[in-house]
Image (cartoon, rainbow over all chains, first blue to last red; front, side, top):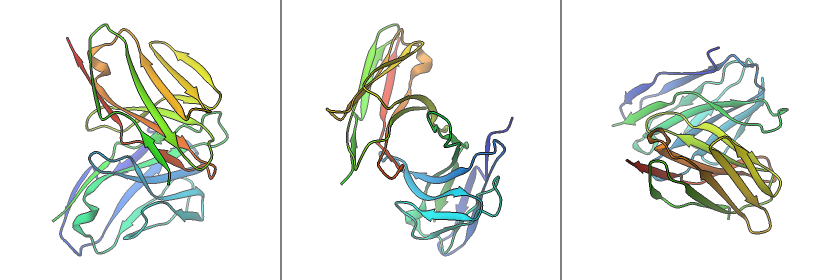
Amino acid sequence: NAGVTQTPKFRILKIGQSMTLQCTQDMNHNYMYWYRQDPGMGLKLIYYSVGAGITDKGEVPNGYNVSRSTTEDFPLRLELAAPSQTSVYFCASSKRETDTGELFFGEGSRLTVL
Amino acid sequence: GQNIDQPTEMTATEGAIVQINCTYQTSGFNGLFWYQQHAGEAPTFLSYNVLDGLEEKGRFSSFLSRSKGYSYLLLKELQMKDSASYLCAVEDSNYQLIWGAGTKLIIKP
C-alpha cells in the first residue's frame, strides 16, 4: 500500500521558472491538502480539495495553483518561482468520515529557488 | 487571530518521562491533534482529542482541557527514537487545521 506519493523529492529552480509538484494517493481519500513547512514555523495550508473537481484556497495560496481532476491526484503548480517559495512542501490526504480525520502525509518535496 | 503555542525545544533523558504542552486560541474547536515528525521526514499521526480528559496509547498519552485551551502530550519510558519534533494542531470551526511551530525533543542517554 503506497499511501501518499509525492514527486520530486528535491528540486532547484531559477527565479521565474515554473514547475508542478505531483501528488497521488491510493487510499480513496476524499480530502487532499498541500502544505508548506518553513524552519521554525507551523505547517501552512496552501490549497485543499474536498473531492474531485473541487478546490479551495488555504492560508497562503498566492503564487500557486492546483487542480483535482481525479480522486487520486492533486498536483500543485508553481508559476514564476520566487525565493520566498523556497520551502518543504507536503501533500496530505484524509478520509473525513473517520473518527479522527487524521492526515496521511507524503514524504515531502524540498524546493529551492535561486 | 488564531494561535498555537508550544515550547521550541525540550531535552529529556532516556527512560524518563516528558510532558510537552500546547496552548491554543482558535475560532472554534473541533479537535486537537498531535503529530510526530522526525528530522527530514513527514509528520505522522499520534493522537486526537475532542473531549476533555486523557487518552492513553501505549507509551504516549494526550490530555485536553477545552475550557483552558490547553493540551499536553506525555511520553513515558523515553527511547532514543523518540527524538523528533512534536506538532500540536487544532481544528477550528471551519474544520481547518491550525498548526503550532512544533517542539523539538532531544533525548540524551
